[in-house]
Each structure stands twice: as structure tokens, then as C-alpha cells.
Amino acid sequence: MKTTAAVLFEAGKPFEIVELDLDGPRDGEVLIRYTAAGLCHSDLHLTDGDLPPRFPIVGGHEGAGIIEEVGPGVTKVKPGDHVVCSFIPNCGHCRYCSTGRQSLCDMGATILEGCMPDGSFRFHSGGEEFGAMCMLGTFSERATISQNSVVKVDDWLPLETAVLVGCGVPTGWGSANYAGGVRNGDITVVYGIGGIGINAVQGAVHAGAKYVIAVDPIEFKRDTALKFGATHVFHDATAAADKVNELSWGQGADQAIVTVGTVDEEVVTAAFNVIGKGGTLVVTGMAAPDKLTVHVSGLDLTLNEKTIKGTLFGSANPQYDIVRLLRLYDAGQLKLDELVTTRYRLEDVNQGYQDLRDGKNIRGIIVH
Ligand SMILES: NC(=O)c1ccc[n+]([C@@H]2O[C@H](COP(=O)([O-])OP(=O)(O)OC[C@H]3O[C@@H](n4cnc5c(N)ncnc54)[C@H](O)[C@@H]3O)[C@@H](O)[C@H]2O)c1
Ligand SMILES: [Zn+2]
Ligand SMILES: [Zn+2]
Image (cartoon, rainbow, N blue to C red; front, side, top):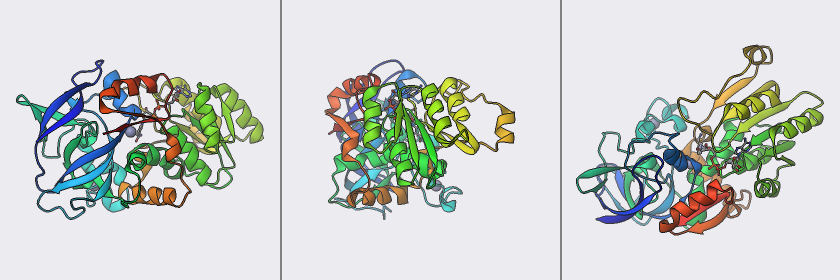
């Protein structure tokens, strides 16, 4: 079968739209027709060289669509089912899945290689094998993926919106609720209001935070944070720290969540310093692996019992949380439609990422 996809051939180069050959599903795999894909900053890290993938790779790891065919042994879904993909698969039985930590599933070991766990690929062209970002490759019309990468969702939900629950929403929401452990009455600061940070704001509001303080240099982002329930917004970390000091009578914030596009030492240090005794710094955003971004006072860490926590997929369990968040949306308690700023065609994927770089989008969506 043929499929059209947006492919990265090397770092620093834009996506190219190419036609690829696609193998059908093998044991435990499904053929999916993607109806929508989200433009998350993590794909931009592939281009920018922060996340080093194996090239060539079909981009896209936020995806939703309809199952067209299933391979032998597939029990989770059947043709016609509507699904949201999880950028981290969940096998259900590894050490991490079986202890309620699906965001760390061992099956996710090849998400940057973009191959199946056995090392084989499903996208090909001219004798070359093409990977799939996060084993999904949602910037393709169709893909063959593991049944462990899909979560069946209610078929009345609009997939164009539900697609965001494949990465941005649970990652941000979980950064507040799971990794940050936000509780009623807390003070939470979120640095960087993109597709992830806006959901950290939304998650902290859900958890009952007394004050949710959003920091972003772009006015449109700050205005959006207010619409999602932030109580205060600031253009930089210093102004936010002054306000936290005032609001907490000098005690500091309970959580600082770093969701900026590219993490650096400056924002991590500001976030570490804004939390008070027993506070938690959550680092969700990414930077190149060889770039050291966390340099803090060990004495402050020890004496004030601070916690620094990394988080993948917001430390959520995709199999449960994707459905859970969509049911919150269905009940009118989670904002999803409001997250989508612009819709693009697959051919316009590079424009979508330029708009993300220019700070114009909370989330851009490709509609296939
Ligand atoms: N840990 C995970 O599981 C996971 C999952 C998805 C994405 N991510 C990462 O999260 C990060 C955010 O992704 P996104 O799609 O929301 O990106 P985005 O580009 O849409 O948003 C980032 C925001 O940060 C703001 N910003 C930049 N520097 C800042 C600073 N110093 N202080 C305050 N704000 C600043 C930008 O103006 C922008 O609004 C990326 O690094 C992405 O790779 C992590
Ligand atoms: Zn993502
Ligand atoms: Zn697992």
C-alpha cells in the first residue's frame, strides 16, 4: 500500500512530503488511517537536533484515527474503531506497566529509532527503511503500528480535538496532577504556555490550586492562560517570583512546572528558586542530551526538602488517562476545542512549525 507522509531526512532540514510504501499489520499490529495529527514541539526537537532520532523518520506523535485492518492476535481493537494514539506504548506487563507506571513502558525503548521492538520497519521506499516518530508517524495518511500504541475512544468524540489527548493534554495535565502532585490550596507556577504548559495550567486548576501563575514572554500565550484559569500571568520569571513571594508571605510556591520549548539552565534555576520548603520542581520540557540544564544548590535541596522530578507523558497511564481525560471533556470539564489555534493540511506542516516557532499557536493540528 502507498501512503503520503511528511519525512525528516536529516537534522536542520524541513519536512519533505513523500510517497512511501507501507507494510500491512503483523502479529499484534494494526493499520490505522490517521484523521488528525497535532504539532507538538517534540517533533521540532528532531529538526533542531535536540532529540537525536534515526533518519529518515516520518514525523508526528500526536495522532487519532480509525482502525482499518488488524493483524493476527489483535484483541484491543477491530476495524472501524476510533482510537487516540499514545506516544508511549503500553504493553501492560513489563515492570513499569504492571506497577501502574505506563509512561515508562519498556516497549517505548525504540520511540526515537521509530522501529518496532524487534527492529523492523513498516515504512519503506526505494530499498530504504523509514522510522516512525514514537512508533506512530502521525504525519502520514496511514501507518502500521502496535495495538499497544492505541486507545479505543468513544466514537462520538471529534477526533480532530481528541487527538490532543495523545500527548499535549495528558503531559501537561499530568505534570501538575501526577508529577507535581498539586493539591487543593497550592500555589503552582508554570513556565512556558504552549500545548503542554496550557494543560499544566488546566491541570493545576482542576486539582484546586489556589493560585496558578503562568509565565510566557508572548502576550497571546498569557491571555490564553487566563482563559484556562490562571490567576496571574507574567512575561518573565523575576516578575513571577516577586508575586509568588507576596502571595505566599515569603513561603514560596508548592510546584514549579517547566514546559518551555527548549529547557535551559536559567529557567530551571528560576523554577527551583521559586518553590519553597517541600516544593516540587517538575521538568517536562526537553533540551539536547549533552546540555546540562539542572544546576542548583544541593544545600537548598536538602535543607528545604525540595524535589526535582522529570516526567514523561505527565507520568500518566495512557490506557486509563486518555479515556479519563476525554470523558472529562465530554462532561464539559476539560477544555480541548479551545486548545486548537490553527488547522493545516499535511503539505503545510512546515508552515505549522514556523507558526509554532513564531509563538502563534497554542496547538496547530494537521487534518488529513
Ligand atoms: N516530557 C514529555 O513527556 C513531553 C511531551 C511532549 C512535549 N514535551 C516537551 O515540552 C516542551 C513544550 O512543548 P510545547 O509543544 O508546549 O512547546 P511550544 O513551543 O508550543 O510552547 C513553549 C512555550 O514556551 C515559551 N517559552 C520559551 N522560553 C520561555 C522562558 N524562558 N520562560 C517562559 N516561557 C518560555 C514559548 O513562548 C512558548 O509559548 C518541549 O520541550 C517538548 O519537547 C515533553
Ligand atoms: Zn508531544
Ligand atoms: Zn510495558
